[in-house]
Image 1: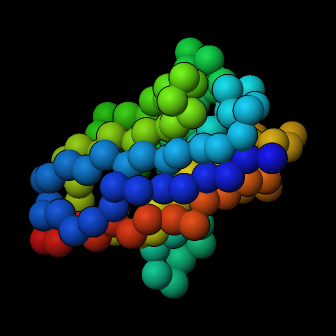
Image 2: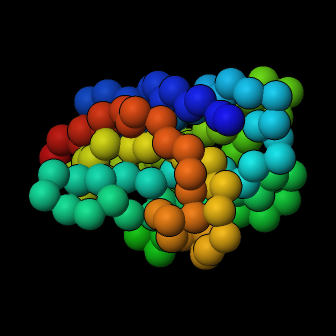
Length: 124
């Protein structure tokens, strides 16, 4: 079992930066690959970024590649999403998730544990 709590969201102007954090509880956090997803109003939840348990492999959605960076600290039981050069289209609720099932790293069904989400709003 893993419990996840996101923080760090807020209101920022276009071109600005935010750093999201996801705090995990549970002794087995370091064994999980982790992902960030987002859901804009009226849209489906979509993949943003993924990081393997060791942190050695990361993957990004094309829409955020070069602007967002995912990282993790297995000692602190945390995963982060550094978001730079934010755009209004990045406005969404951002969720972190632990990958506990088989499936592609960008598939929602592969993640069995989810946080409650944190709102990110980018103004133009």
